[in-house]
Amino acid sequence: MSAVERLKDTRTFIEECWIELQKVTWPDQDQLRSATLVVILFTIVISAIIWLMDKSVSWVIGSIMGLFGA
Image (cartoon, helix red, strand yellow):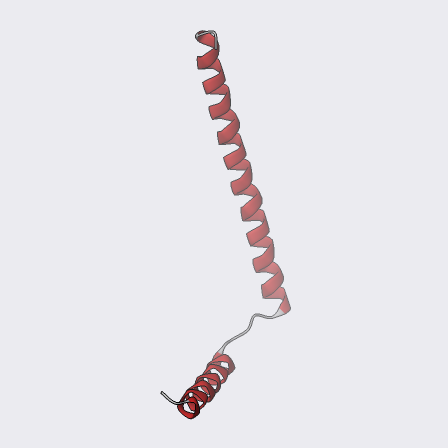
């Protein structure tokens, strides 16, 4: 493949990308704010759940180890 063919293929690719980007429905500011809030809240909730699971397992393992004097 020659350099000229690569250049033409690259140009075609960029033009097709631009055409596809014109078809995209971009969210407005309210939708973006709402989606961001949902993601932040979901992240906080999942983090809290994982933290609680970690503390619970740590306590259980500590209790079991305490029974055996470790």
